[in-house]
Image (cartoon, rainbow, N blue to C red; front, side, top):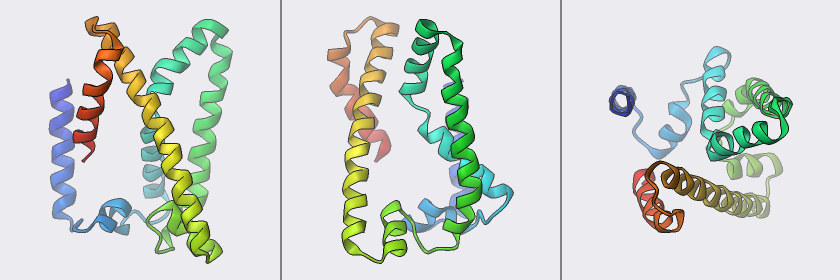
Length: 165
């Protein structure tokens, strides 16, 4: 199944490469071809898929097991709020020349200082989520293969870093 997924992802990459996604800005913004309406729904779905990591894979089942399925309300609420926000805000962001959140902050507030604060905040936030993802990945590998998570953490970090680059 993983090989089928990999082949499909390569095919999607080749298709969009041929569509003129040449620069980093084109890649980040999908060549600004999404526009408003239904394509923005696809962007919102992509955002949701990106944010579904180990917290959802490991944390929500544990929460449901320990506290009951009523707590899944928070997952559904989050999905609805993020999706509806992106449907509304996405077209407005599309009309700007911004590629990143710091770019949006700079265009709204006109301040380089605000751009730097948002950049630092984003880096610190990303480090927190990276730590959670690496720990969660190590726990899953420990569960599947029986290798202690402490021995898996550094190799997992290397593989994830190489894959991301």
